[in-house]
Every structure is written in structure tokens, then in C-alpha cells.
Length: 161
Image 1 (cartoon, helix red, strand yellow):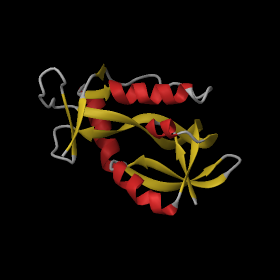
Image 2 (cartoon, one colour):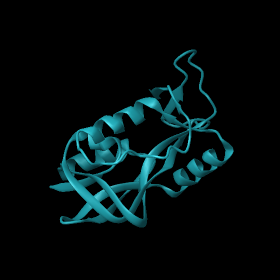
Image 3 (cartoon, rainbow, N blue to C red):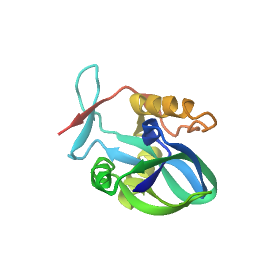
């Protein structure tokens, strides 16, 4: 049995409250909608694919701590989660009062794309993702909302190709 420290949309899977000291939560991972990856985003109004970088939460080593949850998973479930978290790398972290667990952190190239998109003003946050995160945090009272937002929030349809 394995445990995954969740701090973003994975918090919606339930789990037990946990804290990760020595890390900070940021909007520093993205899917580049100008690339032809397995997932793209379309404007729901007209179906066009805007040339943007769609931001998601990640964690990075830093001052402070990140509130989240521990999700128990079997070792057999991890490969499917790895595939879902394509812009992330699974690493071992030391969760307060628990010990080692897995967490997903931005791949370097994804973090670079996110930073470039924020600087260029082409980064966006998908409303559905933000709503999922905020609803999950409400179920675990005390997890702070992921403010400030570094980019506008927009409606986008997710398309898996």
C-alpha cells in the first residue's frame, strides 16, 4: 500500500488531512495548448483551440508548508495515476506526522512553459479545475484557497485525443 500527498484536484478523492513542511504550492505547471499533446483545450463557445498555456497547481521546495490530504493507493494503482499526471513527476516527500509518501511535482519543462505563459500574458486557469480544487478544499476545512491567481480564469472544454 502506498500513500500520495494530494494538494490540488486529487484532494477531491478524499483522504486524511496532512501537512508537508518545507514546500510551497504554486500555479507553476501547465499544458501548452499550442502543442499537439494528448490533451488540448477548446473554447466552449466556438470550439476553437486558443493559443494559451493552461495552468495547474504544483508544489515546490520552499519556505512554509502545504496543506493537503494523504490518499491511500495500492502499488497497482500508481501507474494509472502517473499516466493521468503527465505534466508531473512522482517523487518521495516526508509528510509531517506520517513519513514518506509520494507527491506529484511539475516536470521542469512544464514549469518553464508555465512561467513563460504567465510572463507573456497567455496563461489561463480552467474554471472547472479551479472549481474542483475549491470544492475539494471545502470538504477538508482549513485547506487555504490557492490565491493569488497568476492568470485569468476561463471556461475551457478538455479534449483527450
